[in-house]
Every structure is written in structure tokens, then in C-alpha cells.
Image (cartoon, rainbow over all chains, first blue to last red; front, top):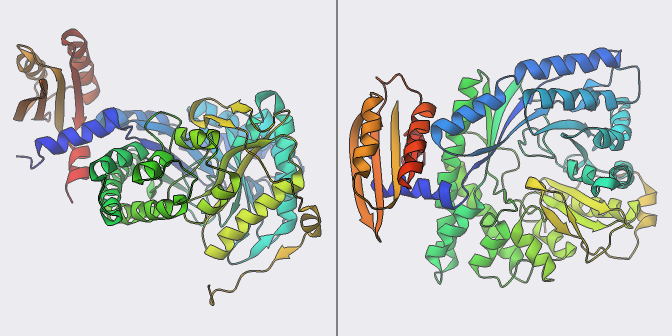
Length: 454
Length: 89
């Protein structure tokens, strides 16, 4: 006889039916290191063939597990070896055909995003890195579901300021090339510092060079479940709040662990990691901002936001770590503006600004994420924002990222609609003060000292 | 494989009879039933073994979905694994 209690069962079903508990993504990482060829057409064919073979059953398996366990698995995705490395041996400089091969393969197997049109340039560029970065705007404008990321800095290597400056221009160019769709290309482009090899979440997922041939990783979610659990401890001290978050994160992660093990078994591949992230969606009741407000803030972004977010982020990790044998990826609370109903509301009521978001990124994963900014923001200013965010990551030994969308023709007070999980966003104000001379310097910010850490 | 069937909704005559009838016809063996009325709402948790059943969870779910529409209650069927993962260390 089972030792499950009546209340245990009802608690789990309520989490799924009323509190938006879901598994956010099953992501299959696939190595493309054996796909290189001097002829880019052959390289593209090899990429297409390998992905469609390896991930043939990914979507069906995800749906089968969803049906058996009765928990929604929202996304099935693929990450691949950074294409800068795969394309490096091609004779041509334009890597757009490789992005198209990724797009076609991803459509063929039925996933909703494929990540890895990426380059890692924290210390400098190779030929492949240069070609890939130059191809990003056109690649994102001519494909549907390919995601791109560039790592411009790390704690070990410092920050490549030439790449920072270039990414400012690439973000602008991507926005212009996809202007007809409110610069949607920029929603698929992330600039990282300390990018991780095993992140299952988009748009920043890629299959790192230290990863095996193929691997299955799972990103959990559940802001709604945490918010609901906290309603039971209103008025109690903050220790009680942390405890509830830990317990809830444990339960959510156990579901992720089960799904990951089952997926790896059914797909006959290796189980990678569980990413313990609280990933919000624009749906009502699935917001990280609302958790912070439940803890006691009038509106997310006001004083107290950084402290509550730090506690939330830490408690999620503590609860999740015990629930899974292998934790990795980004693992923390996400604060994407357009994808979180509470964040959007906070911006609209004036409590949340870009500078406060920057402070928040010091204590949580990942960075300035899904933020729409005025279309007339200069490439240099975007580069300076990337530099600031990278500095936070570099000094604090954590992953940080920038995914900003300079929407052509739009200004502060207007809004932009991306649809689906990407949500909608009010255009946020950016400081008018310039950093052009700093960005024009180029070079590399040296790696930081690792002691004397005040 | 063990499954958990949960039924939630407005109480009425014959809910358990209708659900268990489907399980019996599918060769699903009931191990435990727990049912009560909370705030006027019917709640049932049923644990069963479907080792001898030729049916998949997916097909059983389709049968129960039809019943759910007919009697207007929420019926879910899930592998027991998700509950034990979440509630037992």
C-alpha cells in the first residue's frame, strides 16, 4: 500500500491545475563538432542530418511523459555546439546557411526553439567567431526559431571590449533588420558574461564544448506555486518565508528530476542537469515580481526589491539542490520584463527602472532580460549597458546577460507586443548620458583579482 | 505501473460507480480509495495498479475525459511516480 496521503495527492494536482506548475523545457543538447566541412553546403547538410536523427523522438517523448505524469511540459528545445566552431573550417565567411539548416532541422523535429548560433569571445576572436557574429543580424532576420548568443566576458579572462562594442552594433542591426516585427530578432539574441555550457533555457542555450555527444537537461518553473505557498505565511518572519520557498523549490525540482530521468531513459541518452530556475510567463499567477510583492513590497522595483530577490534566489537553490543529483545551468530566479505580468505592471506604474533591474541582476540569474528600449538608443549606449552588466558578472563570478530590444520607431511610453511566451513590454527609459568615448577605446578589461573582495 | 486517479467537483450520486466501472472494464485493479466532501465539493483520490491492463495511461485518460465531460467533474489520471517523487525522499 502506498504511503501517499490524500492531502499529498491533492496538493500536487492543485499545483498543476491552479498554480501553473509545469516543466518549462526539456532541452536536448547535441554536439555538432563532427559536422565541419570546407564546403558550407556540406556542413549545413551534416548539421541538418545530425539534428533530425538525434532529436527525431524528442517532441513525441516529451508529450508521452506529459501524458503519463500529468504535468505540462511546455517546451521541447535543442541546443547545439556554438556554430562559430562548427563553421570555422568552412571556406565562406557568411554563416547564414548554417542558421537556416538549424531552423529547418528544428522545424522538422517540431521543437519551438534551437539555440547555439553562438560564439565565445571573452578573450578574443577566431576567424569563425568573427564570421558568426557578423552573420547574426541576417541569420536572425531570415530564420524563425534560431537563437543566438555571444559570450563577451568571464571572471577568468576579463571582458572583451571590442566584442562589447561590436555587440552594441549587432543588436542595433538585428533590430533594424527585423523592424517590421518590432525587432523580434533581438528577443532571440543574448550577450553573456560567464555563459554556462549546460543552460537549457532560451535564448541563451548552447551545447558547450565540454558536454557529451548528446544530453537531456530540464528547466523547471513554478513562480505561481511559490507565490501560493507564501500566502500561508503572511505576517510571519522572513525566516519562515525562506523556509517555505525552500520546501516548495524542493517539490518543484523533484518533478523536474523525474521528468529528466524519464526523458533521458526514453531517448536513450545521458541525463545532463536540472536548471533550478523560477521562470515566469506572462500568464496571470506565474510571476516572480508577484512573489516579491507577496513577501511585502508595494510594487516590484521599490526599495527592498534587491533584498527580497536575493533571499528568494538563494532559498530556491537551497531547496532545489537537495532534490536533484545534478544541478546546473543558470539556476536562479529569472527577471525578464516582458515575460512577467508583475514586472510589466511594475514598469507601467513607474516603480521599476533599468537601473533597479541592473541592481537586481547582482543577486539573481541572469541579467537585463527582455527589456524593450527606445529605438533611437545608440549602439554605443547599448554596448555600455552590456559592459556594465558584464562587469557585474565578472566581479561576482556569476552569469549575467543582456537581451535588450531597441524597437525602431518607438519611444518611452509606447509598448511592443511579441506574443506567446515572449509577452509584451512597455518601452523603458535609458539614460541620455553617453559613454561613446569609453566604448570607442576597445581592448580588454583585465581579469579581476579574486581576493580582497570588498 | 501504479496510477493515481483524482476526481474533484460538485457531489452527486454515482461518481465512484462510474469511475470504477471504467477501471474495471480496463482491467485496472484498485488498491486504495479515499474520498470525502470538503466545502460541499467531492474529492476522491484512487490508487490503482494497471500492470494487467493492456491499456496505456493515455487511452485510459481518453475514457475518463469522456466521463468527465458527461458528469461535469474534473478527473485526472497520472502515474504515481510524480506524487512519490514530490512527497517522499
